[in-house]
Length: 232
Image (cartoon, rainbow, N blue to C red):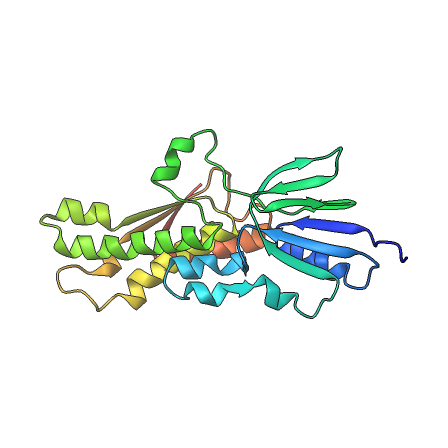
């Protein structure tokens, strides 16, 4: 009777989980990939979904399709509820999965710096649901401004604040400015979208702190030319 091959369970089919599965494609193991969704989300382009430049389908690919040619990988859509380390079991609402090796690649989430109550007003941008919510809010703001009875209310509705000057924040602020000054510039009668205000706030001394000073300055100058107010 042939000996059973080691069982590898990978939690999460983001970049880390998929790369781990592909790296083990020729290894003598059986791989189980578990994810609460049945698609992989290409997070770097979520800001384009949030600003209506792309549709959600453009940044989501079925996990099964990505791994369909890898014979030692099996995909299940399941929500993990716990891990029994001594028994080497992953618990899900669909049952348990035994493992010899466990890879946890469930990704990261945004931080509200101890103010979780901000979440209701300022969604993060990690999931497709976040992107579509932001897109709806941005486009609705212009529609509401068109209906607003006074100038003060219009100015409030046409003010967009992005917190965080990392890559996503920089891209998001630039995309909002592009929507206002190009995409929607001639679509309204009572408001001029080009008069909208976009503010990018970064707690540190410069944008893109993990990049070179030259790249940081270039991003700031480019955003300024687009009409974005940068606060550091």
